[in-house]
Length: 344
Ligand SMILES: Nc1ncnc2c1ncn2[C@@H]1O[C@H](COP(=O)(O)OP(=O)(O)OP(=O)(O)O)[C@@H](O)[C@H]1O
Ligand SMILES: [Mg+2]
Image (cartoon, rainbow, N blue to C red; front, side, top):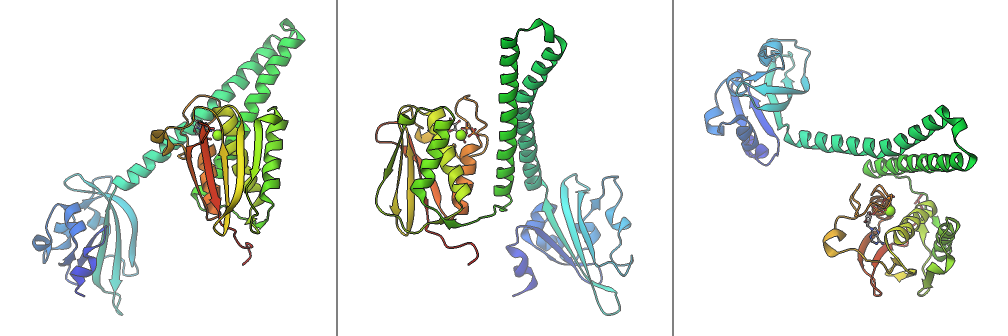
């Protein structure tokens, strides 16, 4: 394969100059970034093809002369540089040296900054969303504690109790948000630690239902249906609990009526559905509910629950979807493979 065609499919731009500093290869991505053509660039001096300046406007090749500069230098780490025409590029370079340390090949890689800017923008959005989510409960905590401290004697016990209850609930919200954010960052970084064990799924679901009842929901709102025998299921018990707990909480908070949980065998694993009798989720929004911070109503949530559910289910090698329950309302369905012990 010739040098030229080997670089042709690279998404990044590549410019190669030989020992005399003349360009011997320029791939199509590089030609596009530099606003030239391969034919026009071949044989030209690399400085003319790559008129790069640093952030102070200095000629980059004067600052780092690959041919005449330090002979021990073999590469340039990624730098953001500007073409004389104004376009910004991320530039890395390799200085390929012979036995006598003289440079016989200069390879420069170019990448446009759009992808990185987009990523930075989405990070900035995430930071501002998180900051906003943290600020509203903290504003209330601060407001009530400041009022109580300043005017302690003017309130009766009932009023003080009510304020402290609000502070307490808001502190819980902050703690919960931080726990959710830590889960999200573990999911995003692919760092979820799985501790698989044999789990009795119906028993685990009963435990999750008991959790909702303990939190104040009437027991008769929940129905568990066991549909056939299950294989031995190796799952992470805490994560399974968290998935079911999140779906139950959503059914209670965003749905209505009886919440029916069904569990049964599916292929070599299991399927669990959680259905309610509320308004349900339209097809148009169904695709969005699993994205982070997406929420359809203002009933107290941060919109991270289903994103975490999806991440946890997928970490088990399973999948989750949402549809319409037979009795109206939303029906979340997730499947899990039987799994194997984590140490295998
Ligand atoms: N059972 C349901 N019925 C109707 N809408 C639902 C149901 N479950 C989820 N939704 C919608 O999907 C959105 C996203 O759910 P998700 O669990 O991700 O966030 P949340 O419940 O708002 O907040 P969090 O779970 O982070 O406290 C909800 O805001 C709600 O609009
Ligand atoms: Mg939720």
